[in-house]
Image 1 (cartoon, rainbow, N blue to C red):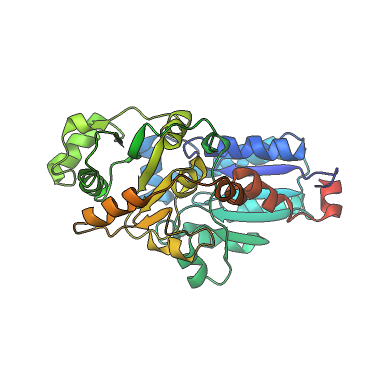
Image 2 (image 1 turned 180 degrees about the horizontal axis):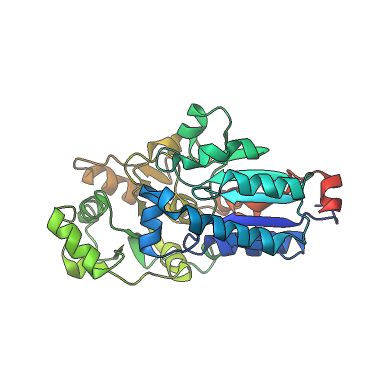
Length: 340
């Protein structure tokens, strides 16, 4: 990396603290302060819902929010501007930033399916580089290039790992996650299981029960308290295998995919697109169907599962947050770095 490092402006929604981890690693690699601004005016549940279904209602609030960001950044020159997701970020704001920073590299990254969050397409013209974690979106949209997600440092496997659990699951309750996780658990004749199901609030759980969406899920099985990322990492490093179930309609590989494999655990996943990845290894990754009895497949996979090798972990460093950040910094020409 050159001694002349880019000055980075990062605009991202709040998502489980990953935006802060990104800011921290960008700062570590550039040796410079990295400015982070939330693209949402607020992260209240009500406002987030309105952003999804009726963003026009928030036009004045959104404009005020991005004018504030422009005011905050007006005395700085950036060589790299990164927008994550772009669900709220307006085109006029990016155009104003470009006018102030004509030599900056503008990059976009989506960690959500464009099908689920298509508003970002209205700002594509403002970027020099556009990336998505979803191969299906990349295949369907010419402007996009593929860039998978990453794992943070907490999930790096340790030589002192001890397998306290044969199988674990940590995630929000949605779709048929609970039913599938319960079915997979029954395939293992062991009490060495860690199953953690999260819901946003008790009232939300009971509302979903009334609608039938949470049919068969007892209240005692779910928690309204999140696990910290450190706690999740400890569970994964202490597991022989971890189950991951993506949302219906999502084909991009979740963050969990990379966190599990980096931790040294094997992966049981419902996402068949993982077959197309260079790191796919049928000895470490079992692809499950969302419906039907798969107990015999799970039982056989677990019985034949061997401890992860160090060379496999070393090769997986390519998917660390450090590598992800470095790939963005490499987009900035040396001349632009010097100016930033």
